[in-house]
Picture 1 (cartoon, rainbow, N blue to C red):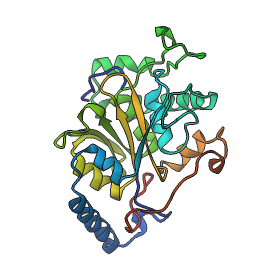
Picture 2: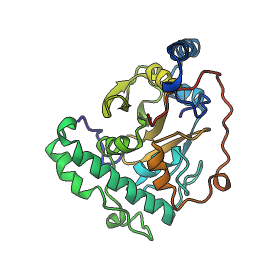
Picture 3: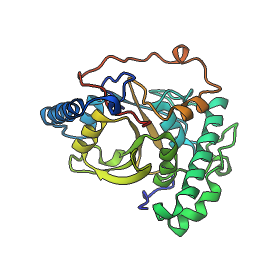
Length: 270
């Protein structure tokens, strides 16, 4: 698979619990038609416009080598230390979830080696995926960092979460013609496809499907793009990762009010 040049590197239309798979073909057609009209009407000039239309807010997570995991966890409400303005140490629960996610990524990548056509370097890196950061964390100590994430390790998580992940490159956000890396989950085939989509394509997809959005700074770090309504992932994975969680409503206030009224969109766990 094509790699990002780095060590390390939602959603927003209101949807109830009825998945599009239970809707009629006419409903599905209307969702697509309305979403296309919305994209054409707003014609985002750059990625920041897409963020605004999707109600995505950049939040900071700890840059300890596991930011690729924390950034993803925050989009569905399971990262305790995420913060809109300051970088904080990961909590014990966050670090436990980080380990589970690393294990899931490694498992999926080993199971799908052939279809993903992993390079020799990717194969060698599988043994290091579960190396976590050491706490108390000292950012000046190189040995304290966990193994860094890449587009490949994110793909491993997509297989379990069954939800597409959009990797925005911060250095290209003002470029209207820039294409972003997208790890698309294909429910009917149970596979992940790597795409390079422009702003319009990402906006159109996100209006119709569940999608996790995270931002890569083009160097070593990720930020989380947290939506007003948390992203839905595979229920069994959500349950497993929530085992140690503080009750949902005690942690974060969520807003489920839609900006655009559309029929239910496709869930991320078909």
